[in-house]
Length: 419
Image 1 (cartoon, one colour):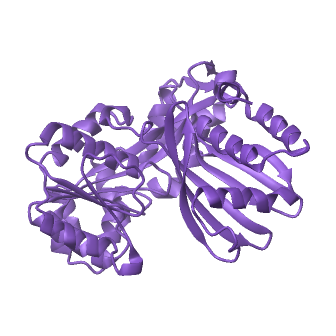
Image 2: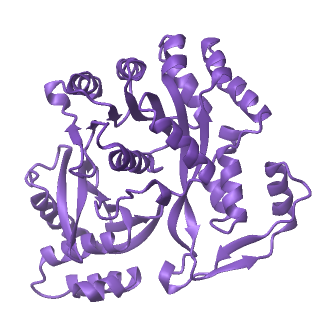
């Protein structure tokens, strides 16, 4: 199957092709491996999973946050397939008892995508996961992220001040790093004569070549905190720290934000108010957090309804009542949409993803609550009293616009985080 045929084929057709391929005498494992990796990239998969079990080898693609089966291979091919990937990733093919990480380049359509390979030993054999990165597919324009116009205006007012600590929070795979890169691209375009940009990442997901990117290396003691301290001696205006994981990194980031730098980073937290209390609970000085923190965005990624097969649907009365209560608009007329499924979306009804987000401006009232070491529930209650829009509000609004579905909103957003 050549590249053009592979691009047009459905996952079911590719699975059938692979089944026929492995039954041929003298078939090459390299062709099997290349077909799996290329189809994963072509399918817009964010991750490629190769999972052994007693019956065989299951190959799955995570597309728009949901798994799709791509192939089920004979168990006797497992070691050959994993060894081939290890060779491509410059890993130790003869070591099957250790955790290994590497990178594999996958050429598709004249471009190259990087797969960050992780190999771990399991009781059934080695499991391989490849996370797909393509610099050509990376979003470099904030307007393409999917934020509302109001949120973009507030974000730009903070980032062009070039000072303070600005955080993005959410679970893994929620688009935090993508948003950070888009912010850096805009700062670089608009303020190149005034701003020096440096990043500390683990790993460096995309190599843009437009600013200085540092790779964390804990084996030599170069972690986020050490990289952040080193970057401060490089005369930067903007510093991006891949993630704040501990008190030391948070403390250095806050003090950098207080001394005339814009520090961008991520933090694992369920909501924007929770991010504030997470910093306080790291035993950081409340007055430092209140002075340095300028804003927080919490976000999730939801599957987008396919434009090719989107249609208006009838809303169940019980569902309509729940939506109205969640929106606090009992009298509103509801119009909902869903995708019925077509070839373009592989009959899932969804194609691509969009963010839902909440934006917390750290104003004087929020700073006062930080100084008082307020709990998350207290901060949220104050914000809701001011008419603040939560993740759920943004998600329901996008569902009513026909961009996603109500079920997708509830699948991705825990009501405990916003109610």
